[in-house]
Length: 84
Image 1: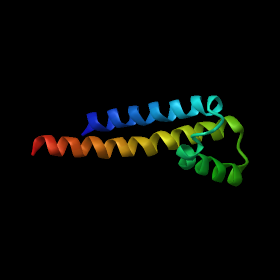
Image 2 (image 1 turned 180 degrees about the vertical axis):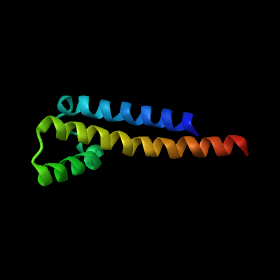
Image 3 (image 1 turned 90 degrees about the horizontal axis):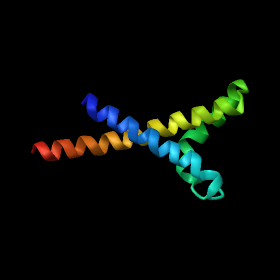
Image 4 (image 1 turned 60 degrees about the vertical axis):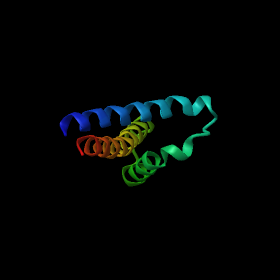
């Protein structure tokens, strides 16, 4: 279980990093994939007036957790199917 969680979080961090890097290169074509993180950063800025760097960091972390959760579910299903 811990191994699946660690792998899933690493996958989520990788996906979030790739999305963050390719946004300016693709003229923000994949912006819809970053909505969870952008929404969290927007609410944070609205609540406390945080810096841009902190908003980007929050966006990256929320996207990493979001995609990591999806990867965790997929890895868990594969583990259950493999054991059955």
